[in-house]
Length: 192
Image (cartoon, rainbow, N blue to C red; front, top):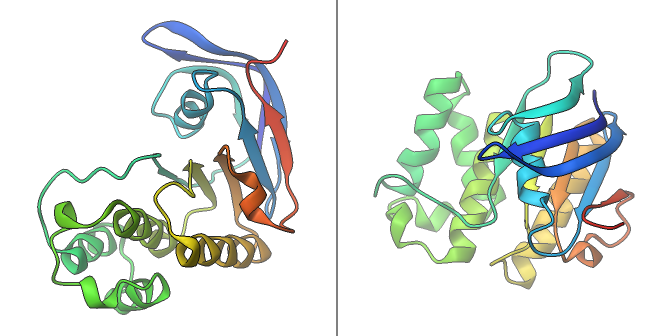
């Protein structure tokens, strides 16, 4: 699916991540670890094309979805409408929106404005969007941030199911112990 060979990732024309190599196949998870400022977020953004990079090679046409460490919403629209807008633009069945809301415990929040959600609710909404739009690769920046215990367990369950169906994940996190028994590779950034 994806391989990095001595990859270099840039932010503001500065090489932040250097000499990173790994390969990712369908159904696999790679955990990116490192100290704050080591380039974990930069690597994720470069893989999904938001930042410039060298040495990132896709073996075929794959789609990816990215969730930043902190939920961000551009406009104060209702939760249900926010998800429906992605479904309409991407040609996803509107019925699947209801399913996404249910899957991520957001059905009672459909009429709430996204900018008024708690951080944990907003993280669940972003995860629901990623599940809704069905990408081959999920790029998750600090996916457990803001989630309560129930939300963390829900995320682990959804990750396991997604990977069992051939989905791949690259996650940057300081909390990979929450993944339990999910098999994963670990890549360390910023270590000599």
